[in-house]
Image (tube, rainbow, N blue to C red; front, side, top):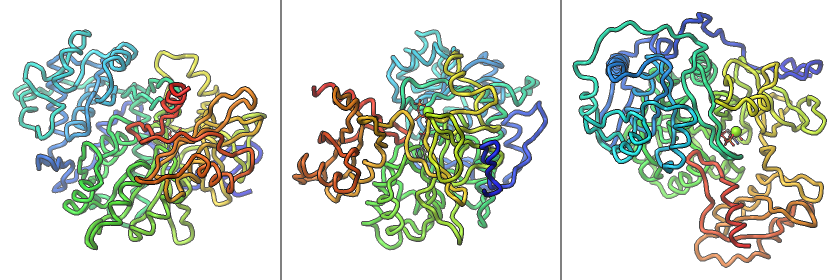
Length: 541
Ligand code: ATP
Ligand code: MG
């Protein structure tokens, strides 16, 4: 066995050397972030207004904002909701709340009032940053919507920072900061709700510090180019742990420039990449497919500055990867894996002379340990075998908020987090994710991974997108049903789709039913919403 796997304990350690984490118990993530000066470097750019913020102004702005918030009554332990799209303000607001020892909870600004109400009462929100049109409703729920008297619409585009100054001008005061410990709660982030109701994940300052060290800083240290010359395009949502870990926290410790985009559009992304010399672009799978189409039609000078595209949050098919490598051969492609519960830390791809395993989710992050557990027998499995991934390490959440039962089922007494994802390590320590445990279709006692069938469907030239889900069946328990988006003008039939898959899989894996649809429902983080598909199925019956 390799030295990173112990057959006695069944524990995998990271292949990377471990990284010393700050041991001072009285350390907050804001102080931790701003230990380095990055003079003369631009931190955040809002291309729609042309507004940009240099690193030298970042901490003073966070401090002014914090003192403004203190005057409004925000104090240690208060929960502040950020119901905002990506903007230059987002990181400033987030960090100023944490600076006061208060707690941030984030949420998709497109959420319904029903969802907003639920989260507000679940985590006890007292203050909120949101657009003016939502402010009144929030006030009616007893939440103090910030910026209302000043008429600041944080939901609108192009607002720059001048109206924002109304909030903080003249209010700066050097009041002593509260004592903040690494173990104090910094954020309550909600998981995506892909497998059921989304859960409130309690993350501490220590979790965020570990994330910066083990994910963002470590990743940057792997490459020869200096991170203060990197320019990131930030379109992955900041309200989700993926965007938050990079654009709101981690990259600010490196002196990286962040170009902010509110919603994804491949043409707009191309323009921004070229105008700002973007070097790094983190994406989710649905963005990758449209970006490839765009790059196919682009002139020779586009996408020149790009060095790396990293993809995460959901599986990406081999076909899409191959297309990508063909269309943008000069760009490094890697996948990364993480969860809200692991503060986005998990695994990350790293291409070397020896290895470029594009389909892999990469190597285990430093300081993290893993087990691969057979979900039937509970035994730990060696490299080459698939089982549920368990993770342990300093980036793992404390608990689910107000949910002792779910916490107990997810983290065991030794600190192992059950990820619910089925993975296997190869002989070189690279991980492959095959499916979520909960998505496995049980057909007549056999197990089918929807992702395998989806990859085959997408490889059909007339299929633009596809998703597979289970439908209950009296005779077989569950049967796999395919939802298929046909290319414009295609006359592909149900039988043709079934035959195409049947030729490539074992008989029990055949698609039993096909539903043609105009699009596959996906979350803001690019995940297929299979429960929406199941709803669609029920409607049709
Ligand atoms: P919920 O837990 O509320 O049902 P969720 O698991 O989708 O929703 P997140 O924390 O946003 O909520 O996402 C983590 C999950 O995303 C992982 O458990 C994994 O299933 C999936 N994931 C993350 N990265 C990748 C990746 N690179 N490839 C495939 N799946 C990924
Ligand atoms: Mg999950």
